[in-house]
Length: 412
Image 1: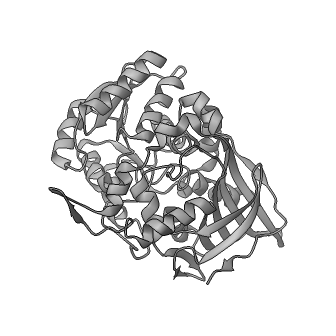
Image 2: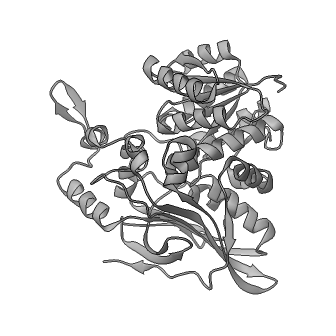
Image 3: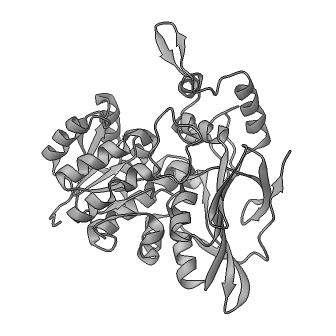
């Protein structure tokens, strides 16, 4: 596709959409493109468009549409003529947006796996809904990059980089996510509360010896000594990137681990025990709503306390294997500070590290370096252009060599 000044569409005007629009406005340098914002309400697009105009002098065009309504979205996109669509709306919109992109001839990116609101303990492997459309993207020569946030996203690219340049053979991949920051909220999540809390209620799924395995939530843990934040306790959690990496590096054992603080976990357990994390709808006045969705509405939005967040987050891929016949362990990771992210784009680390990779991938597709004309996961693409680009945008990364991989503990 040849676009002189490409039209870039962002769908979803939540926290990540706001940060992504700000990044495109602030970090465009000499790039020229038109930015289009699609939200479900006039107010959401209006607020973000006003913000980036006032702060960065960029005018974004605003559109209102429910991205789950494919026909309506097609009408909007035909008016816009987008080169690429970045979908950071809720995960249940992915298939409808992909179908719209196929109809209008636009490239597509998202930052997580497709998921319906009522899905729970979905059987492995994931990404079946998206991959069912892969052949259509290939036939039309359109690029669709799935799950290009940080985790999933950047960590998948870390795995590709280590596979290419650091290890001859990969035996195990552990994705480690540790937010050691603090804020003034008694209980809050760092991204969509309904999604975050539901994943902690689900069984963990991990890939080992060429097969899927599952354990109850919080039943597997391990401790790891991170750069910058030290020793942290992590729990095995079912997560998107394990499912794509198992397809593309199938001989490795693959698992995702997340830091969950003691206070957060104890509050989480109380909420779970009293039924507030249930997905089953109940009647509340004239409305039917699940307790989890109600809780998600009353919990503070991550963006509302971004200015109060202090501390550091470390996320990376701990990869073990062999190099020239000798055992080797590599930890490729990023260290981000909440205060620095707020100073740059007025947000906290989670939104910052989701938005910038999506921006980097968008620019690489438009430049042709990641325009592969089919549907792919990030680990299937050349890692170096992406790693260079996120560094340019302000998201740095590092490589260290731990002495060994820690062994997990099986909790009773």
